[in-house]
Structures are given as C-alpha cells and as structure tokens.
Amino acid sequence: MDVDRPRRLRGFSWHERTKRAVANRRIFPFLLLATTGLGVLSGFVVTVVDHKDFPTFGTGVWWAIVTLGTVGYGDVVPHTAWGRVVGSVVIIVGVTFISFLIATVTSYFVAAEEAESAGATGADRTAQLAEALESLRRIEQRLATIEAKLGN
Image 1 (tube, rainbow, N blue to C red):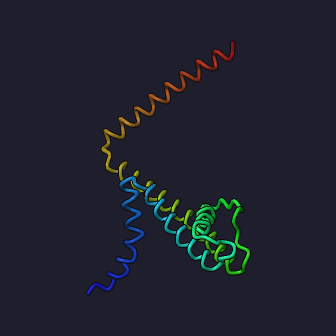
Image 2: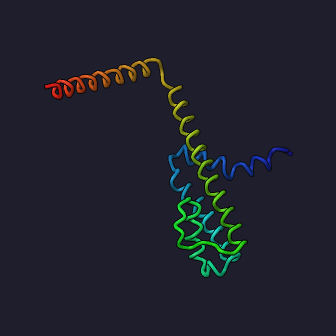
Image 3: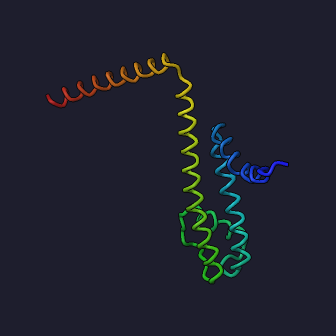
C-alpha cells in the first residue's frame, strides 16, 4: 500500500487543479468558483450565527462576498460578538486567499514562461533578440523625430 496516497489525494484537490487551470489558461473560472464557494459558505455561517444582522441568506452571501473581496461597503455589518468573530475570520481568509492565489498563479505563469523559453532553440532566441533590437531601433527613431519636432 502506498503510504503517501492520502497526502497526494488531499493535495490533488487544490494544487493539481490550480496547476491545470493555469496550464489551460482557465484561471477566471477557477477563481470564480473558489470565491463563490467561500462566499456561500461564509454567508451561510454568518446567517446562522448572527440572524439579527443577517436576516436572509442572500444578505449573508452579499456581505461575505464583499468582505472576502476586501471591499467592505458597510451596508451590512455584524454587531454581535459571534458575528464579528465570523467577520474577522472571513476578512483574514479573504486577504490570505487572495494573496496566496496571486502568488501561486504568478509562480505558475513564470514557470510556464521559463519552460517555454527553455524549449526554444538557439536560432529561435537569436531571432527573438534580433526582433527586439529592431523594435528598439524603431522606437529610438520615433523618439528622435519627436524630440526634433519639439526642439523647433
């Protein structure tokens, strides 16, 4: 029996799905689904914990999405101690989730770009460099023309 199997299965749900989403350039649906899931769960919890300030499930979800996104309009706020505890957790999870997600996605994009660059041949790199130098020459010529016209 494989001892690491449960660890790999647990890691699969976030790590592998995130990798696949980045590789397939399907980040937006992944972010939307994760944020929606957290918002619905948080909205449900705050509605149960603080029913006075969040009388409907929709109000709780609205507050959770706004809080997860770190916007915090202030139109709906918890006033009870337990509501504020849930609010504090949602704020921390939202900020942490966004930070980790941005860092993870960025690292995967950088890794994909490095892998793509590593696969290029010497001739490809030379052609890319020549193209970049030619673009810089054209930009320099345009700037010289602009400077000459401004100097008159």
